[in-house]
Every structure is written in structure tokens, then in C-alpha cells.
Amino acid sequence: MQILSLLLALSAALNIAFTASLLARRSGIGAYKAILTGAGAAGSSLGIYFTAVAAYK
Image (cartoon, rainbow, N blue to C red; front, side, top):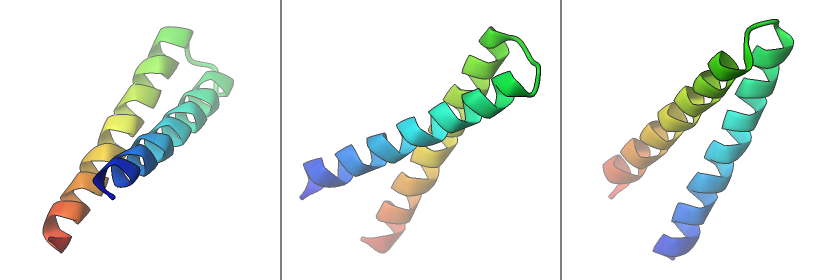
């Protein structure tokens, strides 16, 4: 169950990162800044997910 929970978190973070970097790239900023934006969004979403899991247990 823990492996499936981790895979769900990683999948959601990857989707969030891709969407954030795509939106940032289309807004006109450079590719490297768009990648950093996506990575920041992924890190934030994983942090929120793991904090929620830790608070639940």
C-alpha cells in the first residue's frame, strides 16, 4: 500500500510539474526558468502530500 501511495504522489507531482512548466513556457519565459518553475511546483506538491500523509497517521 505504501508503494502505491508513493507512486500516486510521484505521478501527481509529475503531472503538476509538466503543467506548470508548460504554462510558464507559454507565458514567454525561457526554457530553463520554465523547468525550474516545474521542479518547484513538483517539490511543493510532494511536500504538501507527504505532510498530509504524516498528519493523517
